[in-house]
Length: 525
Image (tube, rainbow, N blue to C red):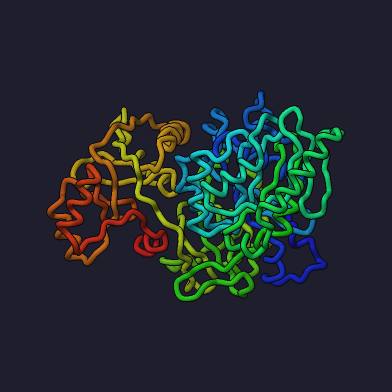
């Protein structure tokens, strides 16, 4: 049994507020191939969490990147689930959330960001802002999350730094404040200079020529005069992004970024709840489930709920109550994560993320608290953009399929709908890659060979209104009616035109693109 790094810092006051101040819970977002997983590895290396960083596309089994553990991720060299890793650096305790590096997983990313207090955006120095970066940035903006930017791969051919910062400001509508400035790029990359203390850090012991030094001096003067200065309040409000330059692969500029996170990133913030927001310094232990992951360990059919602690001092063996159902859950084996490796912890504090092994009792959006009266808000389900019919090769396995789909829906891999007419399940996803993950996991974990066929439906909408209005709507639209896994009524539309048409015909019923998880769980409870 081990304790979190926090418990060993005896010189600090052991109150929730004091421990929360040490916490930096942040997510990393980027376009695939911008170097997110490599940066993650080197941050963990600096924090002493791992001893050999394995690039995602490096050769050999032994060097599979630590934070990419699912089989499909290891085959394709991309991240499709969010991992959580805890490490200590200087006097801060970091909880790093590794988000899916693919746009098809924006829903999982959004839910992961509900557990983060800040984010690091990784940008490829040669490519600048890419489609996925923009999409994930918008997700951050929905939550007003402060963002630091790491311009990666400066040791390869890159675009002009002024041009890159202009593009970030212009396309993402956020001010950029460079903290460092690069000298050269590609083969002529010589290092970075701090815009605040003038320190120069040489890349690979490079010795700049006089001409290169003069060019850097000129660039730094221009940057200081023409670009915004770093301001802590504006950054924490989400309106300004401090920018660092480096090469994650060569572990250059990474410690400067980590220092910046320790110094400037916000500690745990208050969490919105029905009635009253929870403050990190509150005495009552509260937290919310933002992710459920099954089968992290293929040797054990396990299911782990990821709980972000919002307040109080959590102790092992505590009894917490589940929102919606009021069930009491004894947390006997809480775990801290390093990717698929884990250790049991005796205590945890606001900002920490612990895993609670359970058998399907805990679901995404659940609140756990000592009193049972706290209900956190802001964790939605999104209407799927792709709907497919599930057809089994062996019809005798229908019950097994139902259990498997329920289980995967619980994790947020897919959404499941049962049409009012017909027996075939409809699965809904936000992006096409989720369908590949669904098929791959049905085979690997449940031994089910299923086909995902085109369905007649284009989109799904949850219904909101009085019981009488929903019944009237259902009777008139039987062919498109279904229920989700919680039994809530859903309208499956064949086109955007049909949504507009039925919305006009039935003004008393709202067709919703999102549904709050806490409402779902309360209804299910």
